[in-house]
Length: 489
Image (cartoon, rainbow, N blue to C red; front, top):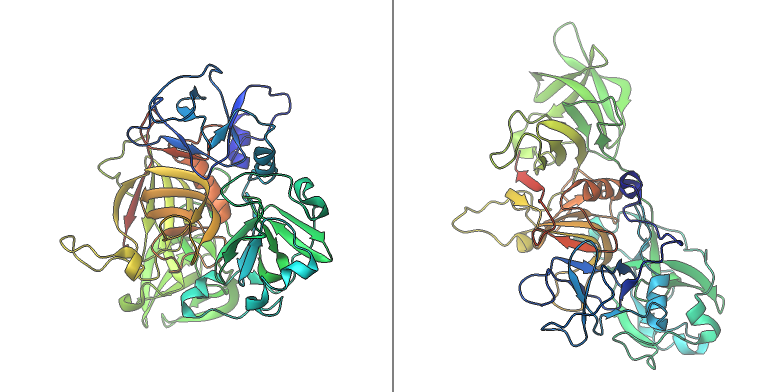
């Protein structure tokens, strides 16, 4: 697939005429290694239900593999054990492939859990009453409290409608795709607590009820989750826009007034407004008056945007200024890519050398910038602060479940968050599909971006994700790594 098509979709679409042999992923962690050996760190990972092109169909003996090693394109080796298969007609692999992530901004559709069982198959009415008794009435949702406010903003009070056929392996109330880590004889495979996020690939009707199919082939009742609206926020791509830095962002959820300068030097609001979550070009000459700083709009002489001059409230004001960098970071060359993120302003700018490529809003940790000294580094997860520093990207993952629990999460998790880029784990730049308030502090500690911005950044940064891979790490022959410089202001 051509590079320009890949940039639009986020993945190479399957080519029906492509008959190259592949190895398929069955396990949650189908790792790719630099050599046919599990020593050191993996250089990448495959995704359940997807396949990587084999460089050679000849098996290779090597340590740490109960089966055989196989070389894949463009580099690396995969072990043919219980996490992978050469038989792409395997019933379980085909069921996983049926729910494989789609290309583009949205690999899946998403919902907010109100508390629900996750079934191995579609239960009959007589079967679902007991497993769902503890969750109360269907189609009910109650706010979970202050800790979840930022996670509930995109919930839409409307039912999820059936839009797909009953999956072929779930017809007639039976499951015909055995496999995986769960007992196929058990009706309930897992329980999803309220507040967790659900990814689903299909919505279908059976027994008079709508059901959702998860990426790992579990079945969830649609009336026990809440529909989430689709994000529309998108930053500025300078190759497709005539805007240029400096920009003033209205990072509030409501329009802000444009100001005019009066004859006595004071400023007053006009009836004209700047839309929510949008940028305007400014002349970078400010006028301070009455506790406010005003910038004249570059394309509208006589009109201004105003922001608070109260430094104590710098993290809460509704206007942020994004200026072009004047010099390169010490570790970046004149033709190299890098990203600058400013916690206080909530602005992010991608550069090639000193040429801006993209500018947007992001959401840092709810706690803002770190407050401790280098000698006594704080627990960023505990205080919801975003770490500062220079971070070459160490790992990129197209979709993966996020949780602070070790092993399989049981208390709270966000399923299949798209376009994750780890600066220094657990610190990541990733999509947040659960809110639309970018520019404001929302995250547990990470850098939240919108789905459209997340896709663009993921495809733009280095190293690039090879065809058939779900994750790629820095080093191991994967090429250079794009640095992200996180600062306070």
